[in-house]
Amino acid sequence: MRMLKSLHCLGPNVYPEVPDGGWGWVVAVAFFLVEVCTYGSIKSLGVFLQDIMDEFGESNSRVSWVISICVFIFTFTAPLSTLLSNRFGHRPVVMMGGFLISLGTITSAFTSSIKEMYITIGIVSGLGYCLTFLPTITIVTQYFSRRRALVTSASSSGEAFAVCAFAPAFTTLKGHIGWRYCLVVLGMLQASVIGCGLLLRPVIIRPKPVKEDNESDREPLSLKQLEAIYELENEQTKTSISSGVSQGSEDSGVTSLSASNGDLRTAGAEAKALMEFGVQDKEGQEQSLSTPPTPVEGELSKVEAGPLQPSRPKLLDFSVLKDSAFIWYSLFGLFATLGFFAPQLYIIELSKSRGLEPSMASYMLSVMAVAEIFGRLSIGMVLNKVCCRKTLVLLACVVLLCLVLVAFTIVWEFWGLVVCCALYGYFMGTVGSTHIPMLAEEDVVGIEKMASSAGVYVFIQSFAGLAGPPLAGTLLYNFSLFPLISEPLCKS
Image 1 (cartoon, one colour):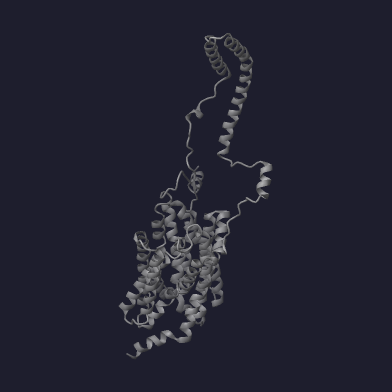
Image 2: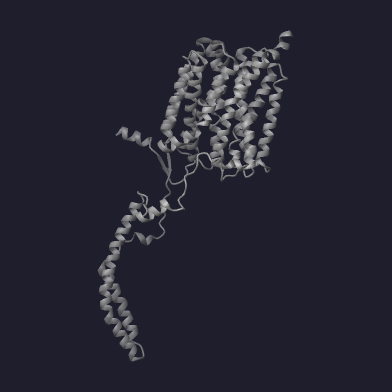
């Protein structure tokens, strides 16, 4: 009995309409934890960057390929995640993704070369991130309607909380147990995604049937009752006709009455047949609630061969590439993604080059994360109140973000770095939480093409995410930026 109750608790939730709460709050918490273990973990790997370089004797560029491959697999395999979710359901796909994330992170602690980390963290964990993140955010949107924007923005802040907590925690922990065992601890924490996937109960919206006519619930009349009603109607007809003026009217009344005896027998047989058909029709209606109607064999062949057969939606509809607005917006996303993960990877090394202690430098990631939370939560309220084009608001945030990145090159002291990290985190939160939903605006592609354009947009981003961190590492290695920056500080 207990096992049956537990299985019932894990089954799908059936609602007459979108619940806008209920079990959806549990799913929202699960999505928060998934954000912690996916994007939060990726952004926190910068803590181990210098340790991996020293362990394997590799350059920044080669080590950065670990993150690049991971992000590339994360975004490039998005259609695969959608296919598996539609085929097997969200729950088993997320649980499998959590297993792959944990497996890839833990095995990376026992690697002997950077190429092995390309496979463990880059491919295995990257695939797990994809199988975990996309199905979770999809099922969250199914549980909420009116509060959807608020819940998704609040739950997506899990990555910022993770960076805020993981950066100083792992910096302190690796001083006691080493970076390899820190990865083991991180992998064990990521195994909690399996439990989060177990909480993703499917939601089924089944509206309550509305009865249009209360008379449909009445019992059908018997044959004797129908005969009595028919005789009463004929008696009334006979009385009205016999009171007529002409004899012809009387003859017609008698004729109609005598003919009514034969009609009565015919009507009785018809009524009986109708009653039997009504019972069968009522049973058929009840059966149709549980099984969908199937077309007639002849009609089925016409539907299969006819020109009006609806085609299945494409996973990646590249026809949106003919839209000039989408092309320009995709170029924005392409270049923006080149730098999405680079500042988080190198801010600690930059802070060390400015004379900060390693323990203090790790707090720069925490400052970015806290500011990013406020950026994600505030941009939604701003976009709901502004009357101008929302793409202009996004453009303003991008311009301010670029100015903050330039400001990093002219600040030297601790508080200057803190201010720059806070501003960068805030504007990064505004851009990171709006650049994909902005596709639904009419001045980009519109809500009708949102599904297809989002797939192509993320597909394009995957190549930029692959090239971004290694490009930053190459610039750092070839131009020796950190030593040059720290040289004036050493001379002083």
